Amino acid sequence: MGKTIALVNQKGGVGKTTTSINLSASLAVLGKKVLLIDLDPQGNTTTGVGINKADIERSIYDVLTGTCKMEEAVIQTKFKKLSIMPATINLAGLDIELLEKSQHEPGYQKQNQLKITLDTIREDYDYIIIDCPPSLGLITTNALTASDSVIIPVQCEFFALEGIMQLLNTIMLAQKSLNPTLQIEGVLLTMLDSRTNLGFEVVDDIRKFFKEKVYNTIIPRLIRLTEAPSHGEPIIAYDPKSRGSEAYLNLAKEVIERNGKQ
Image 1: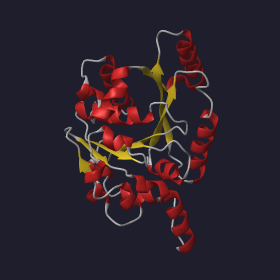
Image 2: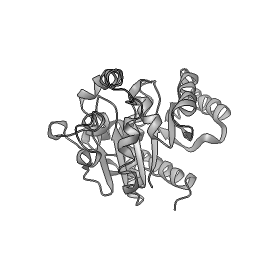
Image 3: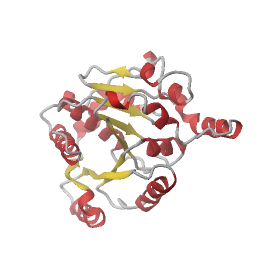
């Protein structure tokens, strides 16, 4: 049965989508069958793996509103072993739609729709990676309910810990009322500028706060990493010999090792 991992941080610009794309692609390169789920209405993860939104007939929105089955919306990417559940802008109104439906249909669980649908295909994948929107609304709640664990990307900059307590509180609430087995898979340090002392001070602070939960791998701040999605490619395809490609391969190896899968 596939392990479902949500990438969560309500703070934007921390490398969440970049990590979703590149961790998924790296796991696939290492031989794991991966489903990447785009839960962000901007759909940057979708375009980042080379999917043209104009060609999308069914998306995660259709799945969560019950108009199609999960497997009907999955798209095989051009990268072997990597599939995606795409997102389009109509996902932006999903929170309200789920809320309205729960008010008119007794017993409808607005926070549980992703889990219900994911359970139908979970056994088909080694890993299911969910890119959450930069908010803590109903869409993210669905992701937390459906996931086994979460990865928290944290940018190596001033105010890095700002908002983390709110996020941890949300995770604890999800554990208490929705998903008691939810774990923190790991904390990922991103966008490290090795030219500044501040970046390394933040690394020390994060490691003191989260201890062994912090991955050994640190994602550097690199132009090539920001360029790759605009070409519809993970870094491992766009520039396979770059430091960014090496970093995400190392992260994927850590994820596999922590899960006891060789």
